[in-house]
Image (cartoon, rainbow, N blue to C red; front, side, top):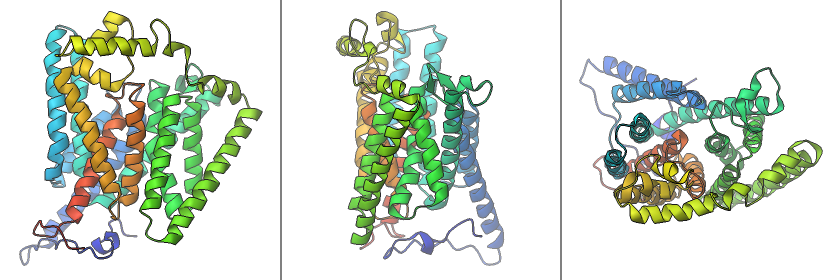
Length: 433
C-alpha cells in the first residue's frame, strides 16, 4: 500500500503540477531516500502532535513538547514559506508585540509573563501548522485528520465515561456534571471536538458513508452533547450549516448536490429524533433543559456577563494602551467573556486591531479557498465552517488561548497557500483554466 499519493492522484482535472527538480546524474538515489524519510517523519510527528492534543489538563502538556518536535521535523523536511503567510505572520507579531508592551502595566507578576509567553507560543504553533500543510498537502492533511479524530475520540470517550461514571475515577473527566474529557473546562472541550466531527460529516455527505465513520461521528457528537456548552452547540450548528452550504455550492454535479441535500435532510431529521429520544427517556433531559436556556443566571444582573461587557467597553476607551493580563478581572472581579474585548483590554488598541484584522482576513481567505476546486477542498470547507462558528462564539467567551483555535488559523492559511500555489505554474504565473 502506498503511503504517499502522486500528483496525478491529487490533482484536479486540468491542473498540471510543477515539474520535480532533477537530481545530478549518478546521485539521485540518496537525495530521494532522504526526502522520503524526512517526509514520513514529518507526517508521523504531525499525527502525534494532533493525537496528543486531547491532553490539556496539565501545563505544559505533552502536545506542547511534540509541537517542538514538529517544528524541527518541518525544518528537516524543507517546508517553504509561501509569501501569502506574511499576512498572518505580520498580524501575529503585531498582536504579540503590543501584548508584551502591556506587561509594563503589570510588572513583577509571574502569571502575566506566562500569559504573554502562551500568546507567543500559540502564534508560533499556528505558523508551524500553516507551513506544514501548505506543501505536500493531502498526505499531511490526512495525517492531521487521523491524529485529530483519534484525539477527539479519546476526549469524547473520557467525557462519556466521566458523565455516566462508567469506571472508577472517571469523575475527573467532568466538571459540574458536564463532560470535559482531559481538558480543564467543558467550554474548551466542546469546541475541540467540532473540526474532526465536521471532517467526518463532510466526507459522508459528499463522498461515502461507512460504518466506521458513522460510529466515530456518533461517539464524538455524543461527547459534544454531554459537555452541555451552549457556545459549543451553537458553534457546531453554525459550522455544520456552513459546511453543508459550501459543499452544496461547490458540488461538481447536480447528482452530488442532490445527494448532499438528501443526506443532510435525512441526517438532521435522524439527529433530531435521536435527541428527543435521549432527552425524554434518560436523565439527560433536565440538564439539557437547564443548559439550553438562552439566558442563564450568570449572564444578567450585577456581576453578570452582559454587565461586565459594558464595563469592559468603558475600560477599552479608558486604557488605549491596554490594562494587561488579568487586570480587568482583578478590578471588576470577573472576566468579561468576549475575546474581542479581551484583545483590546489585554493587548491595547494596537494589539486589539491586529487581532480583529487577523480574524477578518482569515475568514476572507478561508471562504475564498473553500470555493476553489482542489483535492483538499473538503478539508478547507470543514475548517472554515468550524472557524466561523468559533469566531461567533468568541462574542460570549475568551478563545485567545485555545490551542484548537490557533490550529484552525494555521490550517486555514496553510490550505490557502497550497491553493494559491496550485493555481500557479512552475514560473510563478497563474495557470490558465
